[in-house]
Image (cartoon, rainbow, N blue to C red; front, side, top):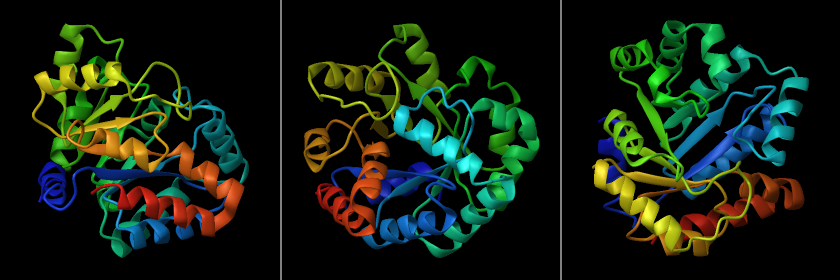
Length: 258
């Protein structure tokens, strides 16, 4: 079953799916595992594991700090892929690698795709790599049966949006607004209009991210998008309330899928 087929199967169970996020190595690898266990218990639908990077340009202050602290904690490739493999063997949700383009360049695209597949990943997200520069990544990902997830933003021209959607695989990641992760997003008619525009050019499931935080956000997206992406808000809860608060927040989001 490929990723799109999996998502469509899950959509027979829920009105919208929940995708969550972990910055590997922050606060620690041990705490990452507790987060993943909570995600497994909440039966989340999809998880992105972020390889920390020194200059995460799409991330807001919370994730920038998380990336920098993870690097200071000494997280390396082996730690990342060990966690990916352990999670893919233990949990039912598919795992996507999220990283910046320097990470993929430094490893080499062929080794990058091979390592994701070997360690149980289903695809990857590279937010700072324009689709025009993917080049051989498209062919290499097909060879490894991986889904390269395309990002669409409200600033894309109509033609570019069409081109991005046509290159999409797995699902389309729709960025709710300009800016970085973690800022609040009001789901007004602008977001609705943007989702309709993306829908015009792709039959793949649409995921909306950047700034979603609460169950009400998921309820508002019923019938408009197929996946809600929540990352910064959950990490903020972990820092403020620890594991109990994190689990409570996560369960409230999971319950809002229906």
